[in-house]
Length: 143
Image (tube, rainbow, N blue to C red; front, side):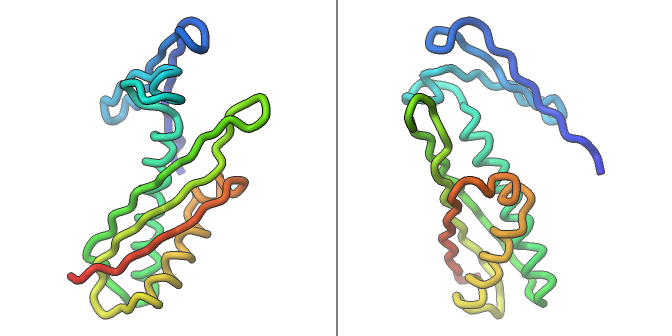
């Protein structure tokens, strides 16, 4: 399996400094700062990038789980809400909520819930983040 690469550069102090994150394979370079991470400033932040990775991983995992169960998904759209909070003397990711909307012919909501939970448990990013409470809201949409 290939090894994936991402980079970050930080300059200055925690609150006054700034940095960039980069994924060269897709030409992504984005700014981040204390303000973009812990306030409402411009730029990205590690939690947002982690959420994008988790949403992507879960969506692919759900597609695979559904296919293995004999269903063909039309589309799977997932949003990940990542909560970071001050806990004691430091910040921690305290929760991740996956919100999924799936269009899948021939499946009902109960079946989708079973398969979505299997995907949540089995996707590699969920496994890596298993120390964080992860909740899931899956909604079946009409195709």
